[in-house]
Length: 343
View 1 (cartoon, rainbow, N blue to C red):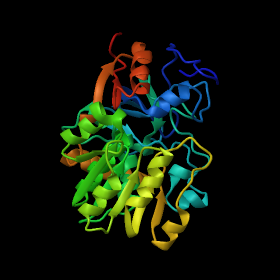
View 2 (tube, rainbow, N blue to C red):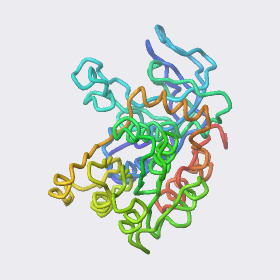
View 3 (cartoon, rainbow, N blue to C red):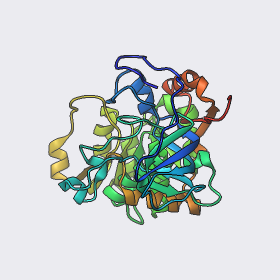
């Protein structure tokens, strides 16, 4: 739990098992993944409303339903969208973007999350995990849905596209897989020296061409590979201002750039006039929509996307500090909590 604002102020606590209200389901958590945003919350570098249980990426089993809860049954293996209490009536919600509703209370940020044995969520947000998909692979459904929203929903990747992914973290690696699943003819994953041993190595195991931007000229490579035209789509998943600037240089005329990574800065420089003159389309992508989860479940069920390849290590909740420290030192892509372990 993050029990108060400020750096630190995080510990394991015993709390009552939550009781599902009307329309809610109680889920026994079988696997929960650690995201970089969880680490940022501990350091007070990301918006949150303590006291609350951290964590928003998980898979588990429905064990209890509140009155009027529909769509799932006790015993179902499930994952959950992260748009609880989106109002459903504002113009943003009516347009199909509950992920951007100002009233939503995202779990692990503004309501209790999944780093616990049990979590309660609105039943309407739950999706059944396809048969044959493990709990730990399903626990990465949330970043997969984020990648689907960015690449397939916002940027509209097309068959035959050349795609460059900047930032080989979990979302970047999943975005690369989504682009490939949607028919991209070439997908290149780029990173830095810090990414070589773990992240770029994972990209290569997944079958992607990789490039270290600190040892060569990525723009030159992309232009050579595309007969001087440039990439059709750039996915900026690193949050590094230098990567945003580089991404703009890699695009063909009328190309698309989708920004997923958060920079942590109030503003960054961009080659505005060049983007205008080249007719580039820039998309900004945040969180995920309900339809992105349906697509994510399809990818998992068919095996077109391998989330399990991103799992680095497994921990009981009591070892949360070790799991978080590995993430902070860039020694893991996704660490998994097994809440029942070590009890």
